[in-house]
Image 1: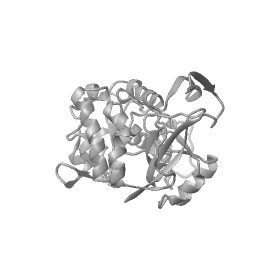
Image 2: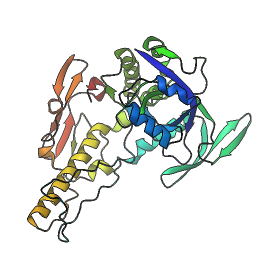
Image 3: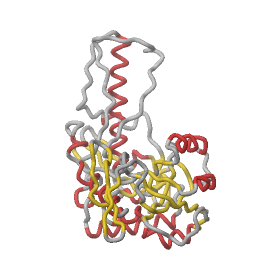
Image 4: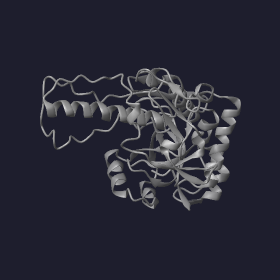
Length: 341
């Protein structure tokens, strides 16, 4: 398996980078054509829409969510265009996990890139200072900041984001050249991905497409953070289990694997919408119970297979994620899981 190295500049001004994703602009746009992916048409559209600036998804890591919104759900045919003043439509809003570690991961990422005096306004970055020689220069114009770096990538995910290992600064590797997984393995500890894991600021998030050789290096970073009980590993409750009496506890109180957080958000939104649709069908009153958890039906709609590294075998998600009326826990470490989709 070969990866492609693409040199360019990371972009942050007027954007909202977080601990596992940020914008990037290649010096040579033609290098993107060397990345083989089934999502090439979608990526081409994203590349055009961003005028060459694309959103990256950092490989192997998952930061606490700072702004996550569930996808729109298609209206059932039985509901059609029915409306009712008696039935309140559930809000599809942005959710976030407890802010501390999500913000720390973002700050660390920007620090690795060499940015100083980062000024945020609302949800995006207004300006940054970058050191030039002995002085600092302020940049505030969109796509003007010279944050030199490179990514190593071999695929694009279903949302059109290149799945990348990101590196700050320069490299002697040839722009647009191929990098073997063995070569990448040797330099992987220099990546932003690894550094965030080793600082305990993000969770491991491994997919089947990630080579075991590379996954093992990232796992080493996780072990470093766990041994020192750094950051999220001091407060994580995923394996211990979290008890919840109301939905807002997962957004304002508990530190849990982001994968489970997103599933909980989507599950609640689905159940609230189903209640709304049922009310429309029966012409009844409805008010969304936004603090409801609906944990009893957590696996009713989807229960995917995952691969466990230590067992070298496949399991259903409900075999490693235990859900009761008001508690959820994971029976294995998130770094032991390989997701298939």
